[in-house]
Length: 96
Image (tube, rainbow, N blue to C red):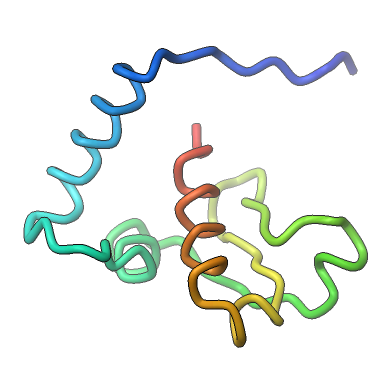
């Protein structure tokens, strides 16, 4: 298995994709975006707190290969809400 290759997008392309996603999933347009609600209720993706994820794998979160769940470091989930929301948004943005 070779290295994982990811497409490169321009800032304008990313901005366009984000705007399209928000228009589809967050019609109210309020800030902060209710990222948990979008992930769990609209997209049907489970959010799973996982103790020791950072210690074991040096990451705060990951998405399962079947895109059915996002695992998040339990400490971040419970104690660092800004990092938790960032991690969810990051994983959501990386979905194929």
